[in-house]
Image (tube, rainbow, N blue to C red; front, side, top):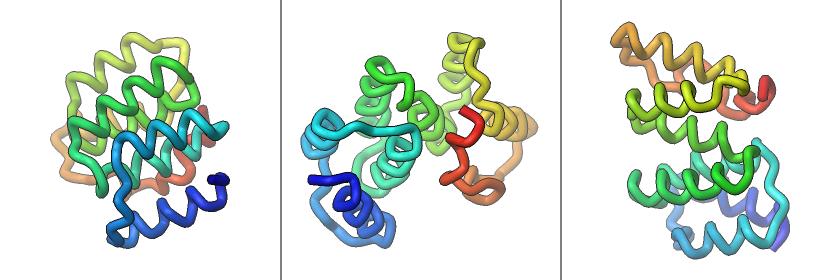
Length: 130
């Protein structure tokens, strides 16, 4: 599979189609292709529709431990699932990384805001300040 084909599959998942995207397929794709930050974010976003939160978080936690390009995708998932304690722990453990946009969103959520990440920023731009 090429990155272009993966992009098509992820678009279909985002549009609500069932394409049998599961944990094993995602692992295989990530292991066989060279992913950049934005690729991980798109995959993470699609995983929220195709996988359970537990599986998505576990998968992207393992990716970010092996490849720092996956850190923003993992942080995105933590914020998407509103796991604020884990977000704080992640940000505290990674002070050398900026994650500016996601830090700002985290601070907004600390004010008990009901906004979703997609309400105030384009997830395609999350890697721009990485």
